[in-house]
Length: 361
Image 1 (cartoon, rainbow, N blue to C red):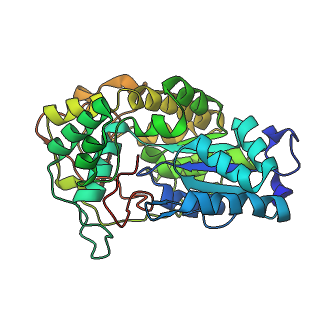
Image 2 (image 1 turned 180 degrees about the vertical axis):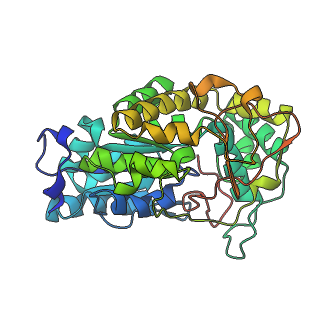
């Protein structure tokens, strides 16, 4: 049964624990829904690769079925889908009123993964405009990063269908405060969700986030997450999934003008992410894994350091970290004419890879 391993904080408010993961596009969600059941006592309530296609509204189909499966059999405890949190919980409730009540009344049943906003928006653009895979389902009209951000800024200001379509033909994501809009009605609601959720992970600390998940759900992390392993490893040596959609944002130039547009579009996501970083670091230290935070904040030998150019908006010690083949941004302002190197490849392309160019809000 799904209640074989109840978290200590569950408190018995329902018979069986239930967790809902808000799959925020381009934050590693496709990898996370595969990894989560391997690192914690989580059992999928159906197809958790639940994304948006303009021709088929999968959340309307999949989420009610997840609710029914949980209520009828109680043999699962893990739901996930892309899209806004509250509307998706209502969809679950249409299949199971009890599941809907649990997810609505108890934010400690919510799981989230966030991403540094500069990196996040670049990842959206990269997914649409720099993919080399022959299996990419959409051919978007080519556009520069700067031009696309300008179109997104205009749509954020006007909200008009014309401006939405002008942006959407180049990329179906709407990057304006993406994480804030998905987690709450406004910044304050999204912050409340980050504070009260059972779990908040960070893509920039993906392996460590999986370790933290184990402590949240089961009260213990895998042995590989212990500080003994930190002496010889830069990140916890866990077997994490890495889904790569063959995008290449490392080829995109990020200059001062681009950075200014990103920060305008992410004016709510930036403070939301700062809160998430503080929450994550506090939870990791409370779980006895703070040794990894110090380790991950230090650039590897032979790699660049940005200590002289760090904007500490995201909290003490949350520095830029580089690894072979990937660049993990921590919120430091991009230097003029900087070329992004090796963006993180845990991309969650299912939500916003529609077979038409219709914009996903």
